[in-house]
Image 1 (cartoon, helix red, strand yellow):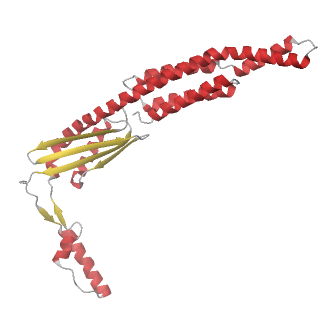
Image 2 (cartoon, one colour):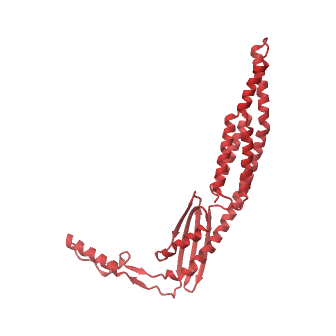
Image 3 (cartoon, rainbow, N blue to C red):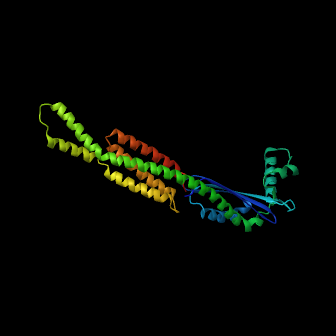
Length: 288
């Protein structure tokens, strides 16, 4: 089991300097990858995304690339003449149309966006980007596994509590019909007093109640769902989406039992089961 929340950081060096990669993620229903890379690395983005997708199934993921060149590595400045021409043409148009003063100096020009570009030689990192990213993902995965184990342990405890509550409900369920029989019999005798009790009518009433309050099918399905959930959380291919689906089925069974139940003690147990299911739901939201 892996958590969708994680963090990883890895640095790799070569002759030119150091490349630092950071990965952060939070829970999300789907896989949403946000890469923060220099423009010069745009051609590498598809390869970077495929590498991330091979490690991560779902979650909101942010990946940062930071380049740090050695001091003795030259950083040539490039002048974008096409940008300069565009700015000059725009300045000329403004001057002619609105009769503005010509105060467009060289120093002003050099401060404009995209006129000067510092070549950070990002292409020199092409051979180490994927290597560094893979190592960063391994570090990131370690944290997700650690948190996943913690979630798994909490889920086991909650499932054990849920099973204990269900066992109590299963023991209590058959007694409810017997108690109802005695209760209605006592009431009828109290009302009729000197009149004889129609046993056949009483049996029909009790049978109707027993059929209406029967939760054996729900108990059986609930036990099956608990077993399936318990197996899934220890599976190597544990899926948060599958766990969420099983939880929906479990909640449906508990709600059905609540609607059928006419016993205060069982109602209290079922409400507590709902609380335990909500705890599981919170954990499941963070499982990959």
